[in-house]
Image (cartoon, rainbow, N blue to C red):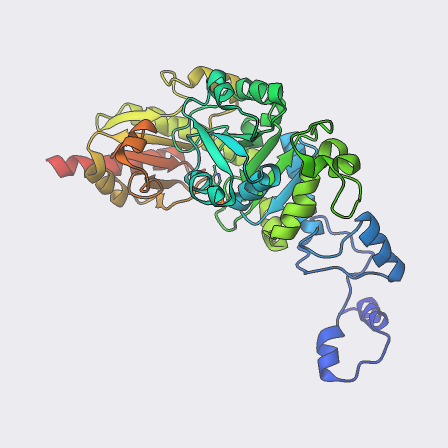
Length: 442
Ligand SMILES: *Cc1c(COP(=O)(O)O)cnc(C)c1O
């Protein structure tokens, strides 16, 4: 330790600390204000010191600065601003998981007796939330089977509808949402369109640019990218209509007579409410440590997604030529029904999550998956590593055969999340899987 540092230590706690318990709490060093880290450090702290009495009074009246990590944290905030910028939004809010991001967004907009309209092809966790859990709070959901048919959304809109929900690239079949078509319906009724864009990432498509109001991500997936942490994020376009009568909790004065969120935050009323009420009161706070890892991940987002999409196209093309494969659902393939929409919305790549179906059903899928050595068998996606999952017996095992059929999932359907490995190694691994399938029938 150099002398300057030792001196700095000495000056931080000039008062006398004699007792062990006191010293174990208070002895130590405060960061030298002369240090400027290149990377925002992990502020792994529950809260922040009030410099003096006036500072505390000021913080509690204006909200400026930091007090408690559930309210705001510099590490988390840095990553929020990065994500808001990448999505072309005004503000972002990070929370503990993608599921938490979906929950606080819906509960922040929709109240008891009100309704959500959702695409039916969505992440199973969100689907379960809408079907099983939100109804207990009096929030019901109407589902649209053909998400790209604006008339189908329009037909379900009623006086109690408060949110439209869809995924830009729905899990697991790599379909492509016509975001602008659904956004036009949302705008005509002043109802926000929420897009879960986890599988696309802002590198491939930015839904706010196509008229969506709110974007959600599971940051556990491509943002973090390395399969180490969970996180979720909500990004707002900052265009809340302050004259709207649909959201009195945003436009009417607070319980204590203070100015409404609309009066205080204007077009950012929604995200201000999500941050200051939903995240604060319901408490799904992201650890600053996880925020740091998500921020590190985002620094290579475009490189990973570009490579993952190119690898995915290579794998999809190869699979589509194999006799044991019945079909491949990848919008990057010329014959895919979503190919044209993919060219419009996803010109930089169609993502790395898609499904394909083996002719031999569940037995073939089992032999295939168990023969692989490079792909990891797990329920996760967006990782740098390639991952594989059999749908009907795992993530989609709560669906009836009829529901699976409607979702285009068969007994031989397998989901892939392609990583950044070398393409020939991935294809060699899948070839090993097909050899195991052939061995079943020979
Ligand atoms: C994983 C996922 C979620 C949930 O995110 P978690 O971080 O796992 O809570 C939501 N939507 C989509 C599309 C996902 O893939």
